[in-house]
Image (cartoon, rainbow, N blue to C red; front, side, top):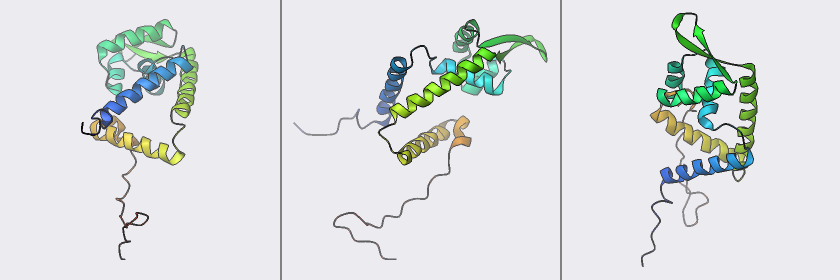
Length: 172
């Protein structure tokens, strides 16, 4: 039988899928009770940019408005956000973060930082930075929300052949 690379292990998409599964499993095991990403993102968005209508939150997060309703209901029930009449348009409601919501958001973000430290422990600080930059570059290419967070691409490497056995350095 021919020895060929496994197409799944050769697929960045599959590897990212498995990475997301690892993040979810590890978060649930190490930080039980912490909100999952969708709730955390909505809470962060309202805390950072609020008060916002549900439509505005959905647009900012590129989230389906129908999915957002249940998330907002749960955050409201937990006492983390409030729906208030928008003074500019009495027909709509604006979401505002509560003091309990701010406390929960801070705790959740701290827990996510500790989770990142655990998950990315095998990488050096430079490798972590490079990994994050590559992910941001891919996201920015496909989603304008990430464009402002993407560092300028590094200049292309000049292959001098140095350090590669059997190759000579390029002449200057």
